[in-house]
Image 1 (cartoon, rainbow, N blue to C red):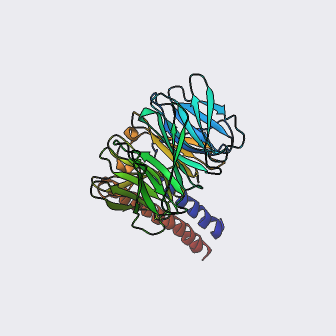
Image 2 (image 1 turned 30 degrees about the vertical axis):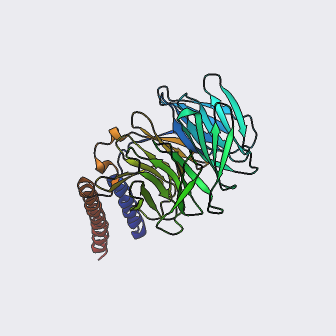
Image 3 (image 1 turned 135 degrees about the vertical axis):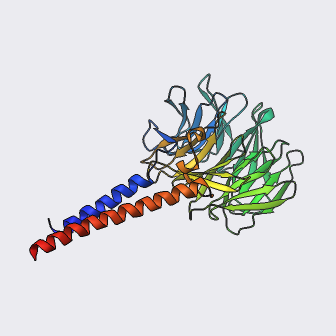
Amino acid sequence: MKKWKLWLIGIVNIVFFTRVVFSADGPITEYVIPTPSSNPVDIAADASDNIWFAEQNSNKLGRFAPSTQTFEEFEIPYKGSSPVGIAVDAGGFIWVALSRDNSIISFSPGEKKFKRYAIPTSDANPYGITAYEGGAIWFTERNSNKIGRLNSGDGAIAEYKIPTANSQPSGIAVSADGAVWFTESNGNKLGMLDPATGKIVEHDVPMLFSNPSDISIDKDGNIWFVELNGNKLGMFNVKFKKFNEAIIPKLATVPSGIAIDKRGSIWFTENRGNRIGVFDPMPATFTEYEIPTYKSLPLGIAVDSRGVVWFTETDRDANKLGRLDPSAVASPGSADAEAGGMGNLLRASRIMAALIIIMFTGFIVWYILRKKERKQE
């Protein structure tokens, strides 16, 4: 056998066995969306743990029932509307922001009917959306630099101008006391709207040009958000009016979606890192889970009532919903744990095993070549 063939076999063996050493049965399950290249973006779970998502390219509203593992898709009757943000209210109605149609729509799962609410400001480009008690639907208007409020009872829409010009509001959430919090992607600020007075207060995010985006609020009232450019998770303590930031271990992950479970763990999508991350605030540790599909471009994320994490894979070739069940994770070693302990120990063991495999394969190749040379002598 020629030398180059032996070396090629050796390299193949190294790659194969190293992949075996570093691979693990991950906790992520993926489900292919029926409509090809649908571009699923935002996602939400209803009270029955059905998963709803906006299909931006196919102009549809999608529903996935975990109990039967079946999809159902509903054609949005407003062509080219580009659905983006999605929320579920207490009554089970689905609310969607239609960026190109410049409207907010509701969908009744029981009647399977849509209802449209036109935004007063033209070309407002509604984006983030959330539902609050009393029938209030709050949303961001990226182009018009406003926060919108829709009264689901009479359909009336009120708008509030953001002080910072061209701030491009993005994510939005409402705290337990009714305060409306939102991120300003271009303004690099965190804003708070008091519904009682209509007054908006803004707080500068510490890192410049961090591009704050999606937002969520924990049980203690802390405001959490992702920093797309900063590669960080940001947290604002409302009581002390103080920011804290946690740097995501991997570089250039582009954190995009964020959701908080009942235990207070912060889940987020790594759009370019192709991982789902979770941050535990108490020991301040990260754990990251590789998504099986290569370059899936995860975006939206939600946690259902059982603590199962759901996310969208926006890439046209991926076109999937992902499911991650934390209870199925045997230990931090099942993922890429960035804190010490068992995660580091398992990672070190894998590296050592890989080095042994590489050395052993190299020795075999050397031995065969050396034996052949001796015969020729």
